[in-house]
View (tube, helix red, strand yellow):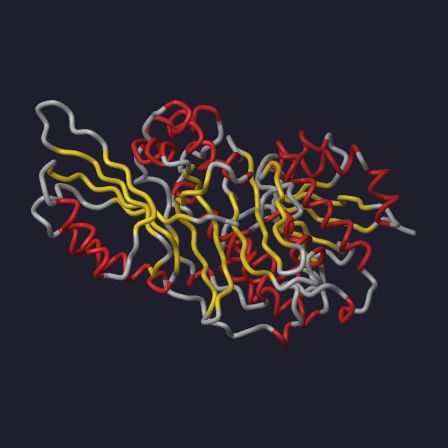
Length: 436
């Protein structure tokens, strides 16, 4: 049987990794796929570099439109990134009847519904394992491995840059700005790290996982997103004293009244496996009603880990290339006409436990005033830490951990607490998840 022909759009870090792994393991991959998989043409604006990376063994063009319009190309691998040109090329490839493999989580999180519908109408596949958590096969696990389960929640460390920064802040007691510069020097953070440190990258990924887990359209615009830029080293230290570690989590949870979809710094008990994921590694914890908790851990970025996921998709598409579209796994796991209209809940309706830190005057009655406000708001305290005031400085930090309550209750209580004359700073509020 003739090899299936692939057009590669972009030969940067992931593109070059894909080319190299496919070439190195071509015989193993052929045995698994049932036929060869051959990159026939590469499109990249830097044609000189592309020829150097491919050793002159494949055709190189500057215009990606040439690739998506070529009749001999069966699968288009989109590794350009971003929303603009990538969207146009993916939709054009689909209109031309080509399958698409992409690592572009931003594109699918924002335009996934449009792209999946276009693919359904043309009877082609859009595969995106590499879009979430790099080399960890979490999309396949959610779509296929856990298909018998009613998924209850997902919690993921799905951005290596922020996890590296938080690990360094905890281990070395350094502030955010110092560690960010070190992360950039080491290549863990981009020159413009905004998407990572503000939580946007993680939100793209958890949006896709949420849609697959709960069978609903992609709704990135409904996600609540907070990054780590305002996180203080002192809160990481206090959390550690209380038996917790702070991680930037992507969280999605099924509730009776809707779906929680959020990204933010989160206190996790130090005894949980996911709390001990350090450096630039990724991990995703999935709770299903039948299987219980399953943990997926590995490299979430990098040339060859991400290439591993891209090539896994190429093998899947090759196997299903001639299959009846009705017999393929749906893009979002559920049949398109069975997607749910369940709402994504606003952050005010989220239920969580909370870490509250406040700087207060070290005088009689302060604690009583604060606990009264919390009690009036229906918030009960699980634990408390009061730091001794320094000599000559009649101020102290109070840290409280709450039991489960709604976010709007906490917001109302914080407003009243901050109005007290004895509270000397804004209240720092972080959410907590037991993940048990």
